[in-house]
Length: 379
Ligand SMILES: Nc1ncnc2c1ncn2[C@@H]1O[C@H](COP(=O)(O)OP(=O)(O)OP(=O)(O)O)[C@@H](O)[C@H]1O
Ligand SMILES: [Mg+2]
Image 1 (spheres, rainbow, N blue to C red):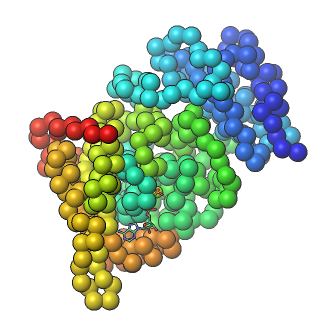
Image 2: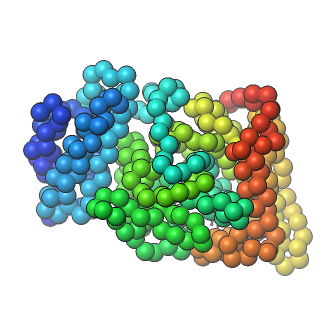
Image 3: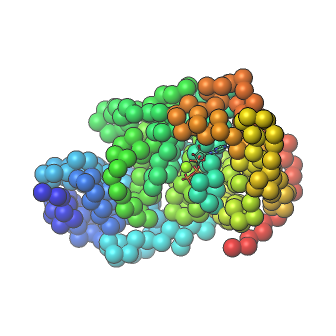
């Protein structure tokens, strides 16, 4: 029989909050999502009392796992109201709007991820522009520069790293509650897609997105990394804001196709990172021009150059142009990213050049002395 929310709440009633009251009554629980025996929810607490709550979180997770029919439980602490105040009414019907408190992430304490020197996000306003393909090949390009690189798939709605890196194995757990990431092509890889079935329909709500990403950042043994590349879901929503709030992002790379409409979305992406004080490392124009695989003729079917102009307009660096090419698509979709499998080819070189520019930006390179970029918000 399918597990119900009520069964979960009953189990949680037996778990005590730090003040002794039952967890179910403590008005700290987010909505509880039960999907195929997998249970997800978060506990919202005051940032100052996180330490006292951690054992409670663990007990809650164990109590839920003990409910017959529960396959897994993912319980996360979120400290949304750092200033304290009355806890929100049980968020069950009304998940907290992340936008309300996203405006000043710099006010929050953003501990880094132990061992990870820099975290960068690869994002776009619009879906399907090639973020994941760019993220993987950029990570490999950074690897080729001699760095130890990790890649995190934060697209919990549509994880793509299992496919792009042809990873089918499940990560192992270490010591009961930490996960060991997968190693592929010299990259350290983690994706929510390793943990859920591809076919499981998932209804993720705002708080769930936050919990899942927080756990993938904090409860995975990333080891020592020079750079962690985060493949973001499309858009400018909860996941992006969570990242900006949960980790000190060193910067964001925005991917766009050259068309006008895509550029409007890219502009939104740039504006969003600026709003949360994350530097934009630059813009990549993907599917920039078409190279005919037969005759090598180049055609600018999407109106090449739009992203470069947009980057100039926004006062952010332009990182490079990646052509629309069958090889990139085929290799990518077969889990054989071009930078790893055709390192001497023309595409690998393009991605390595982009990686070098990104690294220069991270290290305060060519643009370090640049005047503060102009922010143009046209939503
Ligand atoms: N430069 C390119 N040339 C040819 N095909 C490409 C290129 N970049 C990406 N693709 C293909 O386009 C499709 C979408 O790419 P990808 O999954 O990387 O986009 P995305 O922005 O991450 O999408 P989503 O918004 O769904 O996460 C894939 O099939 C990929 O192989
Ligand atoms: Mg993607």
